[in-house]
Length: 108
Image (cartoon, rainbow, N blue to C red; front, side, top):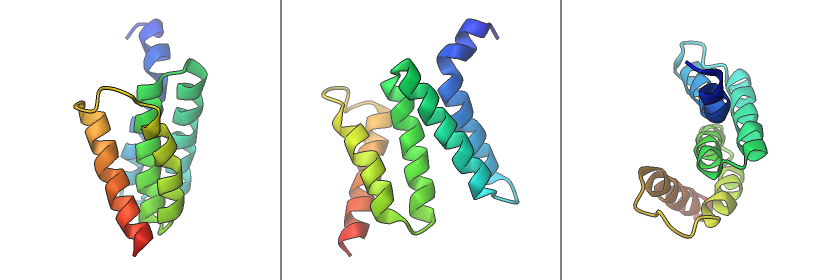
């Protein structure tokens, strides 16, 4: 894989590594969180909004699974709010669905 591609997709590589960690038998949440934070930092540095949305959704899911529903919603809502178009894309549909679930759970 060319180095230039890795640089462009670095945030996604970190996010996927995190998903793999969460699927492993030991489910090391701290290690997974480190990957998500790195993915977010890279996406922000590159100003890659789609990668940042994906990393934020993954981190929000982790927070929700940890019982930190309000924190998960507070992470995802502003990132989702940046988008003004593309709401028919898979990522934005998933983000909206997750945000709806988080908002219902916060309201309970």
